[in-house]
Length: 257
Ligand SMILES: Nc1ncnc2c1ncn2[C@@H]1O[C@H](COP(=O)(O)OP(=O)(O)OP(=O)(O)O)[C@@H](O)[C@H]1O
Image 1 (cartoon, rainbow, N blue to C red):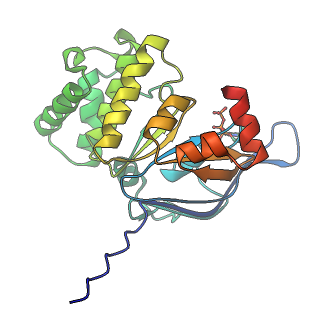
Image 2 (spheres, rainbow, N blue to C red):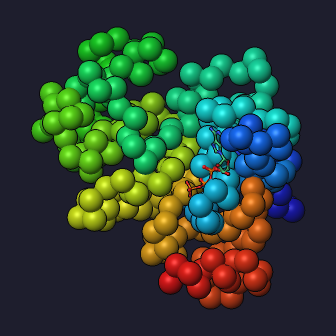
């Protein structure tokens, strides 16, 4: 009997010709942050986005969960049409966890409340259910002993762990990391990268903007080099780091090594 062809999985992230401009400071021309980006990320794929400052990396991530609107183009993430104005943004953001450089915790809420609150608001869980789930995720990321601490009473690394727990407690289909370790003291960086490694090995679909090239080399399935608001070159880590074809990629890599 002929084998049934495997179903072709829909990409978890799909962008088509995404263009985003911002008003330029003091000028008439608009600043082009994204100049027509096409990106497909498949289930369980870990994509690391690198590129010079201002190349559009953060803007791209932020458009994926609707934190930035786009001028034109289409985006579908976790089965939701992000660029459709009728899309339920809170539900989208629950399915698409995002971790920021500066943690973005609720400053007047404890670690436990930070993780429990979005579950109650967006997922409709009861307080006790939300807190039970929150505790299990605080434990998972190693800060359950800090449950009653406010963000100001936590180290940067601990705050980032709480932020990761908050995203994971929503059972996201995708995780976006925007320079998650850039604001941390050097001794905190390794622990957060290890946590990200663990998520990747468990099959989480991830798009990661980072300057940590060691992480990109070890963990990424694909590295994407952006410049001038576009994807210039992409490939497996060894292809990109050891055999970049584009002169702009090679120049960027030579500056950071
Ligand atoms: N809110 C905004 N208002 C105006 N211009 C913006 C805004 N956000 C981004 N830009 C501009 O869009 C371009 C892309 O910025 P973006 O932050 O996406 O780059 P990046 O590659 O993430 O940079 P970095 O590595 O420095 O974080 C830059 O020219 C930036 O100045």
